[in-house]
Image (cartoon, rainbow, N blue to C red; front, side):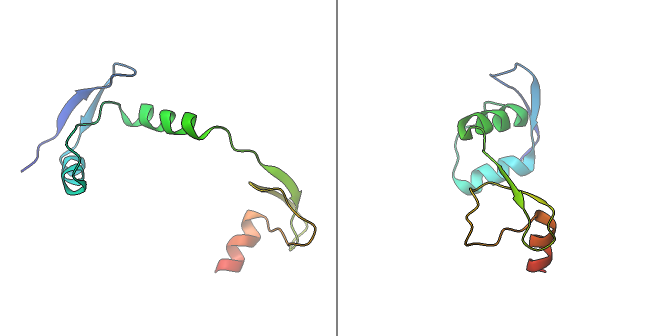
Amino acid sequence: MYEDKTLTCKECGNEFVFTAGEQEFYAEKGFVNEPQRCKECRNARKQAAKGEREFFVTTCSECGGEAKVPFKPRDDRAVLCSDCYAKSKA
């Protein structure tokens, strides 16, 4: 039913493929317009809108290693590094 289309990004001018699967997804979601930007430009635009995320460096409560977290650590709560966090979820 759908066929791949080659579109031109309005941001960078590069051509990109609007695949049949993407077209089907757009139709299911009720989107009527084709994408105007390539995936790289869409991602860059999303990141610019979010802004830089601030990270805090602290000590992991479990292993004592360095932990980078996206929130300001408090003394009354344990903070885990990404490895120890993953282990606790397993």
